[in-house]
Amino acid sequence: MNSTDLRTFAEGRTLDALRGEANTFCESVWGKRVFVRGLIEFSNHCARNCLYCGIRGANTRVARYRLSSDEIVGIVREGFRLGIRTFVLQGGEDPFLSVLDHCRTVERIKDATEGTAAVTLSLGIRSRSEYAALKAAGADRYLLRFETSDETLHTRLRDGVPFAARRRALDDLKELDYEVGSGFMTGLPGETEETFYENVLLCKTLELDMVGIGPFIPHPDTPLWSDAPPSLERTLRAVALVRLLLPMANMPATTAAGSIDPLGREKMLLSGANVLMPNLSPSEAKRRYLLYPGKVCLDEDGSACLSCLSARVLRLGKELVFDRGDSRSAELRHAG
Ligand code: SAM
Ligand code: SF4
Image (cartoon, rainbow, N blue to C red; front, side, top):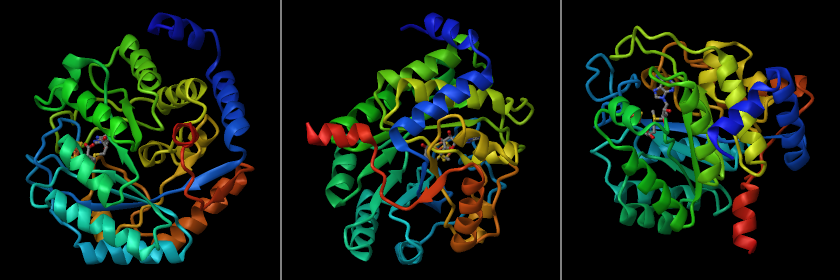
């Protein structure tokens, strides 16, 4: 299938029909289950300057912070006590933290959870040997969105970082046997209809285990401050199409969707998404990790967040579950 075929398919259906098909398809694999991942935003220091991102290194208005390994492990212990079995460590490309620092933290998380919790990292582009060291330390999964499949746009928006570097990193992660997650923002300035459908198709080409899709939301202290955010419909369409192409992948209902529409995450869960990521970071860190304005749930602690999400999910006729929830595609790879 090429992007023209995909577009013809998508435009032949209403958005509601597409979402309904994707939700049915999702439930045929995952049932009514919505998996929980505890998100920890460990640092907002970043050496990169992606034009869209509120914590880009050049933004001098950000109050920078970095959680210590002790703080991260403390958050994990509390999340584990609440039942969470997957922890996602996400942050900027922080030059102060070496790969050995990250390895040590991963090992400590594994110890603290008796080896039962999955550790997902989202630390940006690293060398293959660094990814290998992190895997050996116990990391199970890695999230690295490609952001856009348009190579020229990618280089411009990521301030000179070529698309090929992202692609190489994703290939390395796959070869090192990580569960690999990637994805894109919808409505980035310069995105065409063709790019949109190419983004969806690239998720399939990469045979991703996890796919994160969210709307681009302009941050006032970035070069893209004056661009308009896309409608949520664009994200819902993307999620539904990816779900139809990748039934066995895990797909989060992203915080960015909840930030442009109070029911954004619920709408994503009815469009093929099957994961929620409550933010376990301390409130002060959440406030400083502002990729875009309007971020939700800044004050709730982990337990309040889980109760709120559980009630929201129940209202959809679905159920919040705490299993590790490995992607079916990774399970099949390992079985085969
Ligand atoms: N530094 C790592 C990286 O770039 O992969 C991980 C952290 S980065 C902040 C996580 C994701 O935030 C990016 O992949 C990007 O899609 C998203 N993001 C950044 N700025 C955004 C914005 N203005 N609106 C919506 N999402 C944004
Ligand atoms: Fe840094 Fe990631 Fe933000 Fe780019 S998107 S500036 S790499 S934190």
